[in-house]
Image (cartoon, rainbow, N blue to C red; front, side, top):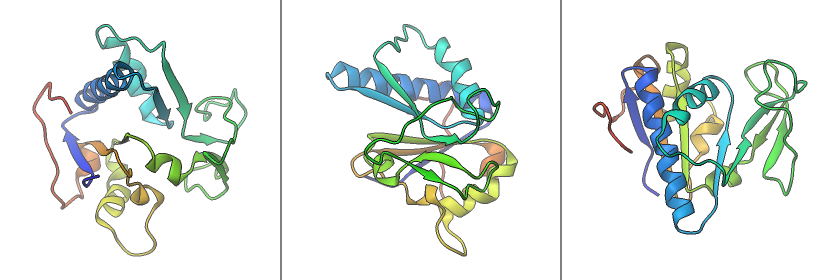
Length: 183
């Protein structure tokens, strides 16, 4: 695995269409070779980005996709903070945590070995409020590494798709693709 690709977009809209294309192309590649395709989703703005952009992908067939949730808040299924309503711990692919920095602190999350076994990991970060944490994850800082900084797929790709406000504090090299670019 090479290092992470940090790709900066002028807007969430441009990020969203590239993300949908990336997910679609990786699904097509996996399914075309007879492999399975699994998509792990976290909550936040990612849900709204993908729910808008994925249906716009021509000829998209999600019928053979396995979709799971990577970071589920432990709240009732009907709670607006719930990414979905159910995710069971099985063979330690997920684990309970009780110290999430964003309320509520209790969650179920995918384990690091599970994430690092993925063929492609994509983090999406938008908005200026994410800039300090994004800098700490990607460029280091004082204190222990944040969990996202420990993600390094053993034999896969690692992308960080971010908008300009989220990237504002970064000093490391980033990519700024033109409109319609494919990853």
